Image (cartoon, rainbow, N blue to C red; front, side, top):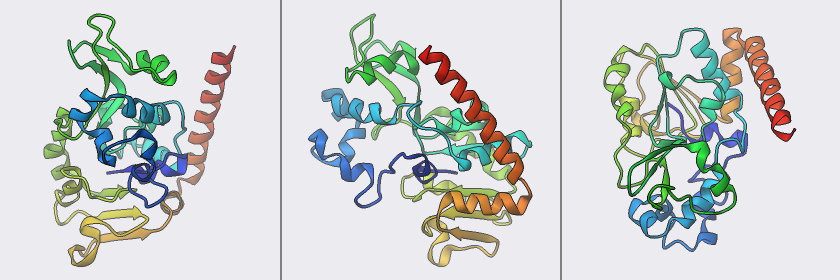
Length: 262
């Protein structure tokens, strides 16, 4: 289970940090209140603020960090049952996490849907409009095309409910970089069996890891998330593999950027 805290080392601001979080820096969009930028009724009336934010967050603007690649390593070693993420930045996909192993609980920019005729489009089709600060419109009906991000007032994606099968099967739960404040995602931390160890790598103790809710087999590693992940990777003897994986991906990304420039 991961949240925005795993992406801040990649340069993406989280939502709730006082002063630096996205919610504290939305005044430029003239919103009635910060959360309105993710409210579906407000979007239907005034989509421009969301697309201004989307221009900042759109996949390709940032690169995955060691935390994302650690989960990729778990996948490559056959140890990952599923990755549940609150993030909409697409860095999990960029790090090579298979879509079949990924539950993007709050949606994704990888696909988009016309709000009028419901026609679907690859997220990449919207990039030119988003980057030029234009609201993407459906060629078929001229309705606004909305990335498949879950707004307040919308249902979670169907695959979120994989947790009903996944969590009873898990033999370890790792929670990283999340405030565990947004429901129903936050409650997932309590769904694993009581015999299952839970590891929190996070800036602060949150949810069931704060106060009296700790279980006897919970482990809490507080501080910088990347530092915590590297500590775990060292303990597992996987540091060289992690570095090799990151270096190989950086090389691939550099080649594709060079090809695009040419």
